[in-house]
Length: 69
Ligand code: SF4
Ligand code: SF4
Image (cartoon, rainbow, N blue to C red; front, top):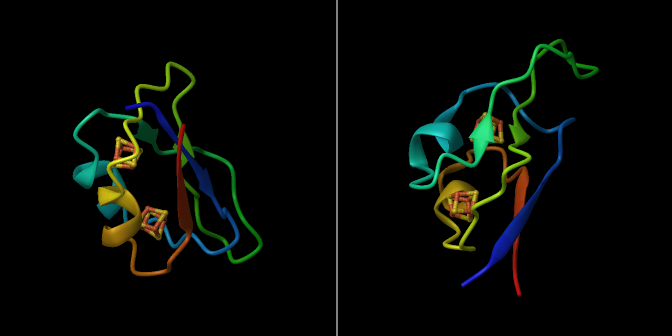
């Protein structure tokens, strides 16, 4: 199954739980800042997302939406 995610960078608090949760290595840290001074994560360009939702379930800030094709 093919999936994709949208990360709300303003909600992200840089805990990186989603990075550890993703079995496909789809999420990476960034060096940019959001308005609260955190480095939000981003979805990798070589997206291998399956839409499994593990990242969204793990995120304590509910910052990730998952879509399946
Ligand atoms: S939905 Fe699953 S495969 Fe896609 S980014 Fe989240 S944890 Fe990774
Ligand atoms: S789990 Fe949520 S708050 Fe933590 S790094 Fe990922 S998107 Fe940001």
